Length: 294
Ligand SMILES: Cc1cc2nc3c(=O)[nH]c(=O)nc-3n(C[C@H](O)[C@H](O)[C@H](O)COP(=O)(O)OP(=O)(O)OC[C@H]3O[C@@H](n4cnc5c(N)ncnc54)[C@H](O)[C@@H]3O)c2cc1C
Image 1 (tube, rainbow, N blue to C red):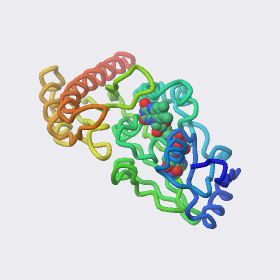
Image 2 (cartoon, rainbow, N blue to C red; image 1 turned 90 degrees about the vertical axis):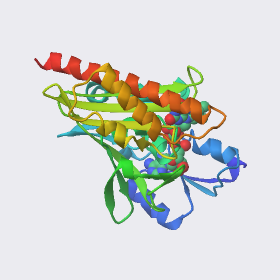
Image 3 (cartoon, rainbow, N blue to C red; image 1 turned 90 degrees about the horizontal axis):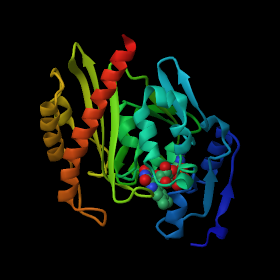
C-alpha cells in the first residue's frame, strides 16, 4: 500500500484524539509504528486515516504513585530500560525490554503498542502479567482499568473497543521478598522475536513460597498463566527439585504451534528449560532483596 495516500492526524491532547476518533471510526492508531507501518506496507492492514499518539503529553512518562508504577502508553522500550523505578522495583521488565529487537526499534517501540498489537511473542506482556499489572482503557466518555491477564483474546485481538485507547499501564510495587525474572529464547542475538519465553514471579514468607505466577509467552494464542505449575509451588520451600517438577508441569500447560521459528516439540522443551531458569533467577532476586533488607 502507498503510504503517501494515507491521511495523517497528530492530536496534541487526549481530548483532541477522542474527538477525532469519534469522527474517524476506522482510523488506525499509531504509536512507534514498528508493527503497524510494517503491516500496512505488507498489505496486511488497510488504512485511510492514521491517528498518531506521539504528540500527546498525557501518554508520556514513568511515575511512581503511592504503591504502584504508572507507565504512559507511548513510553518506549529504551525509556523502560533506563528508568530508575523500573530498575529498582521490576528489573525483569527492563530485561524484557532490552531483549527486544535492535536499539533502533527499541527507541521507537512503545509499551502500549507492544501490548495492543497482541502478538503472542511480544516480550513485555509476560512480565507485566507476572507483576499483576492493569491497563487503563479510555474513550471520550469513560475509562476502565482491567487486569492485563484479561486483556488478550486471541492473536492480534484484545478487549480494547473501537474509539478506546490504551492510555496507561499500572504495575503494583512488588511486596517484600518478591522476585520476578524473564527468560527468552530467540533464534538470533538481536532483532528476533521469542520462540518461547517465560516470566516467573515468587514471593517468600517464612522461607516458603507464598505466591507464585509463571507466565508463558509465544507458546499459546495469548500470554498464558501456567496455573497448575504456579500452584504446585505454593507452601513449599524453594529447591532445584521443586522448580524442576514445576517446569515439567508448565511444559504440559503450554499450547505451542509449529511455525517458521520452531516446532511445537521444541517450544515445549524450551518452556521447561526457561521455567526452571526464570524460577531460579527469581529466587536469587528474593534472596538478594532479603539480604539488603536485613
Ligand atoms: C525488526 C523488528 C523486530 C522486532 N522485534 C521484536 C522483539 O524482539 N520483541 C517484541 O516484543 N516485538 C518486536 N517487534 C515488534 C514491535 O517492535 C513491538 O511490538 C513494539 O512494541 C510495537 O510498538 P509500536 O509503538 O511500534 O506499535 P505500533 O506499530 O504503533 O502499533 C502496534 C499496534 O497497536 C495499536 N496501538 C498502539 N498503541 C496503542 C494504544 N495506546 N492504544 C490502542 N492501540 C494501540 C496500533 O493500532 C497497532 O495495531 C519487532 C518489530 C520489528 C519491525
